[in-house]
Image 1 (cartoon, rainbow, N blue to C red):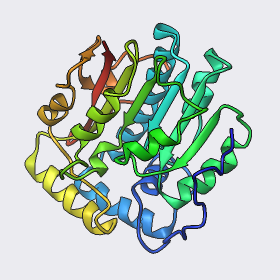
Image 2 (image 1 turned 180 degrees about the horizontal axis):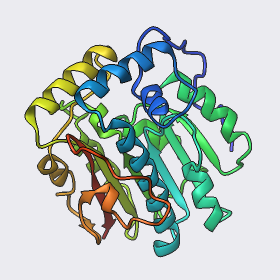
Image 3 (image 1 turned 180 degrees about the vertical axis):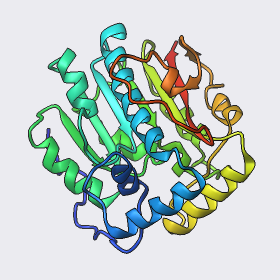
Amino acid sequence: MNRNEANDWQEPIDRARPSAARMYDFLLGGNRNYPSDRRAVEELLKTAPSSRELALNNRSFLIRVVRHIAETYGIKQFIDHGSGLPTQSNVHEVAEAIHPDARVVYVDNDPMVLGYGRAVLDESPNAVILNADMADTPAIVASLKGRIDLAEPVAALFVSVLHCVPDRDNGDPKAIIERMVSLLAPGSVVVVCQLVSDDATVRDTVTELMQQQTGGKWGRVRTEADVRGFFEIDRLVVEPPGLVDVTDWYPDAQAPARQATLEWIEFGGLARVV
């Protein structure tokens, strides 16, 4: 695969403005972040003190769900929307451990994610990162040729990313999922989870904070009901264990400690395309 095809790696990185990807990296204990990101996390922790545990549990869920898809469904093709910065046990590494010929397309438009992603993926012949907005389904599909065969089962991942998407015409989370589902072959799967809270104050405070910190590159903290609505799409059938706090999605012995407080959680699950 040609990692540079249809990608622009020249967009500058704004170190003064936090990004959700770099804040997440800091919460995971990574070092690909700047003082602006760390200050933003400090502010976030004042309202949502369990955010670090939440991030670790979400990463654990991603690893488990990719392994489950590869083992249980035998799927070898993955499209990871809003991939974020590379860390330990990335999607292609987990999938390739089960299927050495697994193919992974990461989708992101954060300049730092693109730069680090290219460096990491130079070692994997079957993985590529696309410079694209995850809401621009036509552009993504146009870049899949020779990489992903949509006539065969595919795993479409929307893991901890839809809270970055605002509610707007053709760009709202459900519309993005619907467009992708319409292109997937039967036997494919879709994974969706995002940050939710049943506390309106937490939802409003964190949403406002992230809107300000990221310069509007944020959607909103939603409710469990909102996320359940994302799965109310023709051809989608939610698979066991249903839609849950991702900490409870087939937990294993490697799962990190549970959140000490539950002011917000990562909520979602896996659905099969029929």
